[in-house]
Image (cartoon, rainbow, N blue to C red; front, side, top):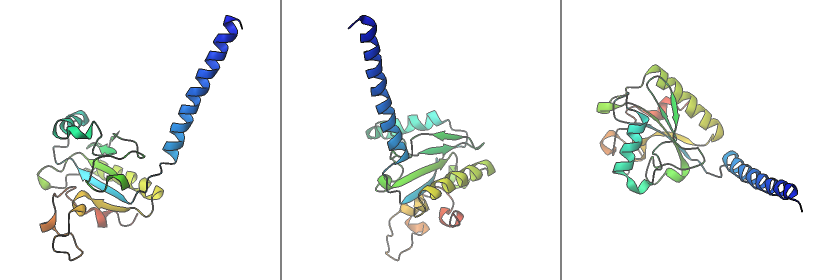
Length: 178
Protein backbone atom coordinates (compact mmCIF):
# COMPACT_ATOMS: atom_id res chain seq x y z
CA UNK A 1 0.00 0.00 0.00
CA UNK A 2 1.44 3.34 -1.01
CA UNK A 3 1.65 6.37 1.25
CA UNK A 4 -1.23 8.06 -0.57
CA UNK A 5 -3.53 5.03 -0.14
CA UNK A 6 -2.57 4.72 3.53
CA UNK A 7 -3.34 8.41 4.18
CA UNK A 8 -6.70 8.14 2.40
CA UNK A 9 -7.63 5.05 4.43
CA UNK A 10 -6.58 6.81 7.66
CA UNK A 11 -8.57 9.91 6.73
CA UNK A 12 -11.67 7.83 5.91
CA UNK A 13 -11.43 5.95 9.21
CA UNK A 14 -11.02 9.18 11.20
CA UNK A 15 -13.90 10.84 9.34
CA UNK A 16 -16.16 7.83 9.89
CA UNK A 17 -15.34 7.83 13.59
CA UNK A 18 -16.05 11.57 13.88
CA UNK A 19 -19.36 11.20 12.03
CA UNK A 20 -20.37 8.36 14.32
CA UNK A 21 -19.64 10.55 17.39
CA UNK A 22 -21.64 13.45 15.93
CA UNK A 23 -24.56 11.15 15.10
CA UNK A 24 -24.51 9.72 18.63
CA UNK A 25 -24.50 13.19 20.20
CA UNK A 26 -27.26 14.36 17.84
CA UNK A 27 -29.40 11.34 18.71
CA UNK A 28 -29.01 12.07 22.41
CA UNK A 29 -29.90 15.73 21.89
CA UNK A 30 -32.97 14.89 19.81
CA UNK A 31 -34.14 12.06 22.07
CA UNK A 32 -33.19 13.27 25.51
CA UNK A 33 -34.59 10.31 27.40
CA UNK A 34 -35.45 12.61 30.31
CA UNK A 35 -38.82 12.29 31.94
CA UNK A 36 -39.46 16.02 32.43
CA UNK A 37 -42.18 16.48 35.03
CA UNK A 38 -41.43 20.05 36.11
CA UNK A 39 -40.52 23.39 34.58
CA UNK A 40 -39.17 25.66 37.30
CA UNK A 41 -39.04 29.45 37.08
CA UNK A 42 -36.35 31.23 39.08
CA UNK A 43 -34.93 34.68 39.74
CA UNK A 44 -31.32 35.48 40.59
CA UNK A 45 -32.49 37.54 43.61
CA UNK A 46 -29.89 40.11 42.62
CA UNK A 47 -29.76 43.22 40.48
CA UNK A 48 -31.00 42.87 36.90
CA UNK A 49 -27.64 44.01 35.52
CA UNK A 50 -25.62 41.09 36.97
CA UNK A 51 -23.41 39.51 34.39
CA UNK A 52 -23.86 35.85 33.59
CA UNK A 53 -20.20 35.30 34.46
CA UNK A 54 -20.72 36.84 37.93
CA UNK A 55 -23.51 34.34 38.56
CA UNK A 56 -21.40 31.41 37.34
CA UNK A 57 -18.54 32.57 39.59
CA UNK A 58 -20.93 32.72 42.55
CA UNK A 59 -22.01 29.10 41.93
CA UNK A 60 -18.39 27.98 41.64
CA UNK A 61 -17.54 29.61 45.00
CA UNK A 62 -20.67 28.66 46.92
CA UNK A 63 -21.25 25.21 45.43
CA UNK A 64 -17.89 23.66 44.45
CA UNK A 65 -19.44 20.16 44.48
CA UNK A 66 -21.57 21.16 41.48
CA UNK A 67 -18.35 20.89 39.42
CA UNK A 68 -19.36 23.68 37.06
CA UNK A 69 -22.93 22.46 36.48
CA UNK A 70 -25.19 25.54 36.42
CA UNK A 71 -28.38 26.14 38.35
CA UNK A 72 -30.47 26.86 35.25
CA UNK A 73 -30.78 25.80 31.63
CA UNK A 74 -31.52 29.34 30.41
CA UNK A 75 -31.06 32.76 32.01
CA UNK A 76 -32.82 35.89 30.72
CA UNK A 77 -31.35 39.41 30.87
CA UNK A 78 -33.46 42.51 31.54
CA UNK A 79 -33.48 43.26 27.78
CA UNK A 80 -34.78 39.74 27.01
CA UNK A 81 -31.46 38.28 25.82
CA UNK A 82 -31.26 34.55 26.53
CA UNK A 83 -28.14 32.84 27.83
CA UNK A 84 -28.02 29.08 27.32
CA UNK A 85 -26.19 27.65 30.34
CA UNK A 86 -26.98 23.96 29.90
CA UNK A 87 -28.56 21.88 27.17
CA UNK A 88 -32.08 20.70 27.96
CA UNK A 89 -31.10 17.04 27.90
CA UNK A 90 -28.66 17.57 30.78
CA UNK A 91 -29.77 18.24 34.34
CA UNK A 92 -28.89 21.36 36.30
CA UNK A 93 -28.80 22.15 40.02
CA UNK A 94 -31.93 24.31 40.21
CA UNK A 95 -34.10 22.62 42.87
CA UNK A 96 -32.73 19.89 45.12
CA UNK A 97 -34.62 16.63 44.73
CA UNK A 98 -36.24 17.59 41.39
CA UNK A 99 -33.36 18.18 38.98
CA UNK A 100 -33.35 14.86 37.15
CA UNK A 101 -36.96 15.52 36.10
CA UNK A 102 -36.87 19.30 35.62
CA UNK A 103 -35.99 22.15 33.31
CA UNK A 104 -35.02 25.50 34.84
CA UNK A 105 -35.32 29.05 33.51
CA UNK A 106 -34.28 32.17 35.40
CA UNK A 107 -34.68 35.90 35.00
CA UNK A 108 -31.97 38.25 36.22
CA UNK A 109 -33.44 40.34 38.99
CA UNK A 110 -35.83 39.79 41.86
CA UNK A 111 -33.68 41.67 44.34
CA UNK A 112 -35.37 42.44 47.66
CA UNK A 113 -38.03 39.76 47.18
CA UNK A 114 -39.79 41.77 44.46
CA UNK A 115 -40.99 40.76 41.02
CA UNK A 116 -38.72 42.95 38.90
CA UNK A 117 -39.31 41.28 35.53
CA UNK A 118 -39.21 43.65 32.60
CA UNK A 119 -41.70 43.31 29.74
CA UNK A 120 -38.88 41.80 27.65
CA UNK A 121 -38.16 39.20 30.34
CA UNK A 122 -41.85 38.35 30.68
CA UNK A 123 -42.06 37.83 26.92
CA UNK A 124 -38.94 35.62 26.78
CA UNK A 125 -39.95 33.57 29.81
CA UNK A 126 -43.33 32.94 28.19
CA UNK A 127 -41.71 31.87 24.90
CA UNK A 128 -39.24 29.53 26.63
CA UNK A 129 -41.85 27.95 28.87
CA UNK A 130 -44.34 27.59 26.00
CA UNK A 131 -41.70 25.77 23.94
CA UNK A 132 -40.91 23.43 26.82
CA UNK A 133 -44.62 22.80 27.46
CA UNK A 134 -45.01 21.79 23.80
CA UNK A 135 -42.18 19.30 24.23
CA UNK A 136 -43.37 18.10 27.65
CA UNK A 137 -47.14 18.79 27.80
CA UNK A 138 -47.60 17.04 31.16
CA UNK A 139 -44.86 19.02 32.91
CA UNK A 140 -46.04 21.30 35.72
CA UNK A 141 -44.82 24.90 35.67
CA UNK A 142 -43.77 25.96 39.16
CA UNK A 143 -41.79 28.67 40.85
CA UNK A 144 -38.82 27.53 42.91
CA UNK A 145 -40.79 28.43 46.05
CA UNK A 146 -43.48 25.90 45.09
CA UNK A 147 -41.06 23.06 45.80
CA UNK A 148 -40.97 24.04 49.49
CA UNK A 149 -42.23 21.39 51.92
CA UNK A 150 -45.88 21.42 52.92
CA UNK A 151 -45.12 21.73 56.63
CA UNK A 152 -48.71 21.62 57.86
CA UNK A 153 -49.68 18.85 55.38
CA UNK A 154 -52.76 20.69 54.09
CA UNK A 155 -51.90 20.15 50.40
CA UNK A 156 -51.00 23.82 49.87
CA UNK A 157 -47.58 25.50 49.88
CA UNK A 158 -48.22 28.87 51.50
CA UNK A 159 -45.98 31.89 52.04
CA UNK A 160 -45.20 30.89 55.63
CA UNK A 161 -43.86 27.55 54.32
CA UNK A 162 -41.63 28.89 51.53
CA UNK A 163 -37.93 28.16 51.92
CA UNK A 164 -37.36 31.08 49.55
CA UNK A 165 -39.60 33.47 47.62
CA UNK A 166 -38.03 32.78 44.22
CA UNK A 167 -39.16 33.74 41.58
CA UNK A 168 -40.99 36.47 43.54
CA UNK A 169 -44.27 35.99 41.67
CA UNK A 170 -46.80 33.16 41.47
CA UNK A 171 -45.69 31.14 38.45
CA UNK A 172 -48.52 28.59 38.68
CA UNK A 173 -51.42 30.86 37.59
CA UNK A 174 -49.14 32.95 35.37
CA UNK A 175 -48.44 30.00 33.06
CA UNK A 176 -51.48 27.77 33.64
CA UNK A 177 -52.85 28.59 30.19
CA UNK A 178 -49.91 26.87 28.50
